[in-house]
Length: 197
Length: 197
DNA sequence: CTCCTTAAACTAATTTGATTAGTTAATTAA
DNA sequence: TTAATTAACTAATCAAATTAGTTTAAGGAG
Image 1 (spheres, protein in one colour):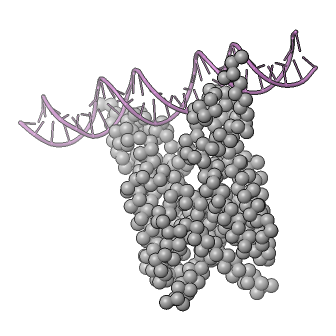
Image 2 (cartoon, each protein chain N blue to C red):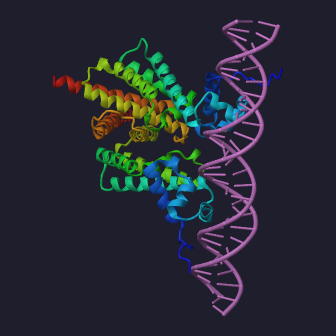
Image 3 (cartoon, rainbow over the protein chains, first blue to last red):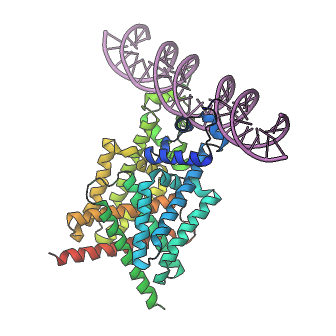
């Protein structure tokens, strides 16, 4: 009879609520204590769905990568070359802005021990590699470029999240310039490679 | 008579030991419990030197910025232009490799509430701005460039630290390429600005 | 050299959060 | 209708930060 029993919580709801919480307050403020309060259950009940707090964070990290991948995939469809690079870059930034906590979870996971995590990471890598194919770079140069783009996007978004760009000067414009610069570099490398063919 | 009493701990020793610990095991594994064990005192004794664990982390963050600044300053001396950019960039990376925990402390500080922290951050910013002066960029463009370089360096080092560059392909070479690309972009922007003079 | 002040250690106790153990009630399937 | 399972609960444990209150060593004043 007691309606308050049986709150029909499941993993999905837990992930949903945790996501909401970390996107709002930051990953570090996620605790079973608070989460349980939000879900109106007792902390130990969470163990029926999740192995531990760290486990939950791993699941969130995977959610983060999945979401990021989907954003980028969608942004890359029907585009190619420079336009595609701009597009997936903007998507990356958009995702981080929308889900800062999830993104942080994805980047703070202790050395990707998790297989599923590694898998999704690989998916994103391949997505970028595919976008770069049109430039006909050697495999080695392509790897350097992928690393470069990841560095730029991760660095930019992380700094933005931590409020690292103090001044009011248009932040999106900074990104555009940065990406343009990088794209010019890709062209330059592409030309150099063609010369040694 | 008991020599074990009076361990002559002071703030300096605490910072030293904590630095050692976080550089070795990561910021997240720093606790008063472990730190006290290392110093052979009881956890509450730490409060004679530090207000809280968070306070200690703030102090470490400041140490991190100071160290980073010193590395970059030293690397920038007697150099100019492209060479200076490469040099301070390499110094940045070196510092993070040598003090990953300290660097993480410096980048995870909750929204630079700390005045001293902001001050050191500003110092680094100005150092980079000075290095860029030779390119005669407008103030606005200079800001975008500084943001770009920070993004690159923070992103690159963070990814490297989290083992994000899976493949064995030379990581330093990736950085060199990335910085070269970026420098080309600076030249390009510099040219464009001269044309509109 | 002895006393006083103080810094810096200590022990004991509190609080909070994760986690475990053991119990119970509601749902589901036979 | 009943047995099995799921998912909640309470009670208890453990670890870590923090606070309160106490004690002792060291250094200076007399």
